[in-house]
Amino acid sequence: MKYRRLGNSGLKVSALGLGTNAFGKRADREASEQIIHYAIDNGINFVDTANIYAGSESEKIIGKALQGRRHDVVLATKAGLVRGAGVNERGSSRYHLMAELEGSLKRLKTDYVDFYQIHTFDPQTPLEETLRTLEDMVRSGKVRYIGASNYMAWELMKALGISDRLGLNRFAATQASYSLADRTPEQELIPMCLDQGVSIIPYFPLAGGILSGKYSAADIVPQGSRAETDPNFQRFISDRTIALSVNVATLASQMDVTPSSLSLSWLMHQPVVSSVIVGATKVEQLKANLTSVSLELSAEMLGELDAVSHSFRHGEPFAIYRLPV
Image (tube, rainbow, N blue to C red; front, side):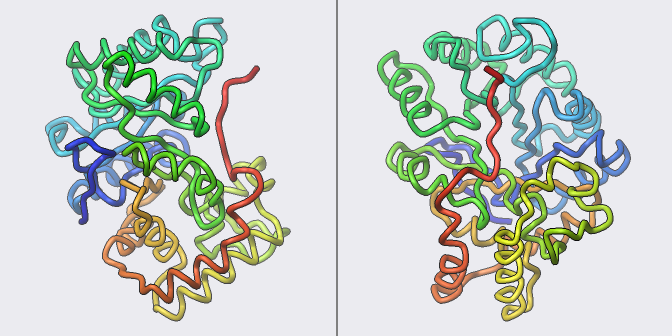
């Protein structure tokens, strides 16, 4: 396994991280625990979850699975998206974040979170309030490092500026949709992050499976795919994304690797990326994706991948999660 610094911090995270959105939903408790232990046994130390994943079941599964192995992982969770119907059960207010951190700690069966992330920007809460709350969490020892997710470049830069002005802990990293099928962060977010020493943690690194090679046509839904289990996902499947998938698969065949491994490795070759989080519903998926860590891409291959995906630098992000207005 390769390890990289989380932003400008001294914390080292595995180049491949474990995303747990499927735990308690598309992967039952037994399968999820097997995946977690396999990940740790194979050098993955970054485990990423959120208070809302599978109705918080993901955190509960992780908490149980990490009993006796808590020290082996950099445990990351999030809060800020809609948690319930109440007016204060969302957003980045002190009221909401304090309550959600305590809930996450209880479910995760731990007294601290290594990396606590604001799940999305909250336009109705002053950033000073959010950042001072996070500072208090760090000072209390319940949080080690802080991060953001789904922030636009100007929102993240504003937060960093406030932290610098007030002498507060800065966001070490931010999560964003980033893949060969979504290179929109390269327009503004990534140049800003490189300048400010903030790393990117890509989510949807395989564009929800589109880059895995399993989709052959826009109107054909593979059995067991995300498009079958989540009908809303079909909006991402188009002739354009299918064409990219085919091109990536062709390049992967030249190296005798899977399209998934090639796509993940491309992200790991980006200087701004610290850990690429991938989900899994069975151990075999994670085992296959681990091959991406040792894959070295030549300048020629990187150029080929850039060429086939260049148009995906423009347009709308593949995914972004924001609070409802």
